[in-house]
Length: 631
Image 1 (cartoon, helix red, strand yellow):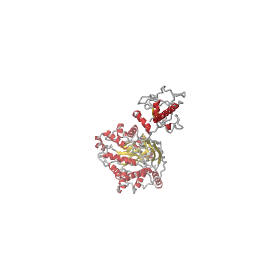
Image 2 (tube, rainbow, N blue to C red):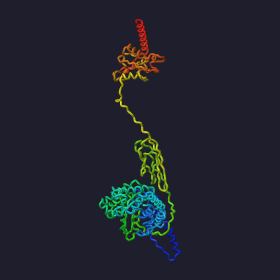
Image 3 (tube, rainbow, N blue to C red):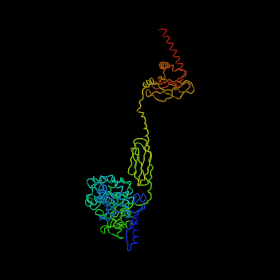
Image 4 (cartoon, helix red, strand yellow):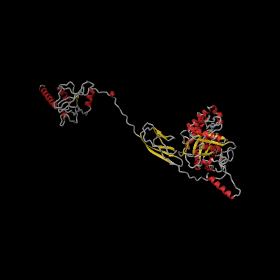
């Protein structure tokens, strides 16, 4: 029992004690008493289970269907039609009466405060609020289109007042009980997925869902009220695919709105009429296989008794078979007029395991209609909401030109946003961070998770994109052009070389090499196909002293006279015999002795070479003197 009823009960007891003959009889349907909200938070769904703050809950959700309060508030507080301020469908008087009027409506905030205070007074914790037909759809859509910020601000005000009084909302986006339906500023039928009417309807729904993502007061979105109404069937579905055509359309709506909010979705189908009959097969086509998180059904009747319990037991069992919870979005007893609450239906649904009921009227509720004054703000002490924590570990490395992805997850339902200097990164509504790095570097990434009542959490990390490895170049030998012998000789004369040749010694006794002994063959010159010869000093060590001059020696062991002639004309004698120059010691001027055809190296004894050179010099001197004498 709410505190308002407690105050009323106390007043009645006092009156009975002090006023002779005063008595009162109160008959309250028992169903509403089971909906007292102990904990408030975000509603979710997992299979057939309803979740509250991420945990399975046995909480029962009961309330009224309200099809005019939002529309009249839009007209009064956004469009300026103040004459309709305060008007509702039910909360201050029975349905179909003219008493649904809340006198406290100077501002939108005052009106919605009183609205949800009265809702709480009736022990209701769920209101199905929004368009029920083309009239309501038009007012909501045009407010969104023409006064977008004011409209969204009003919806957030409604959510804040609902949450303050422990009430959740099933927010109805659109509806139609007549045909043609509202076209949302486009053309064609909203039931035709190729029409501009459908495209504009989807755009409006998506934007509204995203705008209210952080509002815990949203228990679910109802994307369309009674699109299977008998009028819609007769004028559209009967010639447009019937029940399978309807199923295809509702699946398209579910697919088009998927991922735009983490709040559950439903579609307010009637489920029984000209188009759909009784049974699991039709239940699946109407709601069970459409792709929404919460299934839906409307039912009006006057039956009672155990024999009629199947009217509610069967649909609850069908919903279980489809793996989803069921919301009885409209329920009413039509054995009298005006309608009243259907106590038998409510109690049977609770007994069958159902958890969500929306009564079409509140007539029959204790204390209804409310005739009191402005109700105060509630003094409600609720358990603190859980803090947000990130449950995922960020991926901190990426590769240039390769897709990077990281799925961010949190401990409670949150709205995620990203702040980063990595321009290639983006975040989806589900928290998937992805992109393709186009340059190496270190990038700062900050993810913000936000939820109701100012709860926030950050996850910060540095994303490293290293330099890509340098490509490995493998030379192709076939592409290398061998220079000819003449080119080699010219380059040797023009450009000083500083090469060191090291060859194993074939002489192990320290004696001069035997010229008749064929040296080992190591390579083959492509020009002459001749083998190079190793040159060793007198100690058998391979000489590695070089000079900047080349000595071309043929591989047919030319005579020493010819060799000396070439040496005399080509060698730099001062350099060769300067102090400290030895055959196996490097000097500033290096000597290279190469074969003219095969770059072979002459095996020669250093002492023998020196003697030969000296003899050549003496011979030359004598020849010069003879020439001078006989000239």
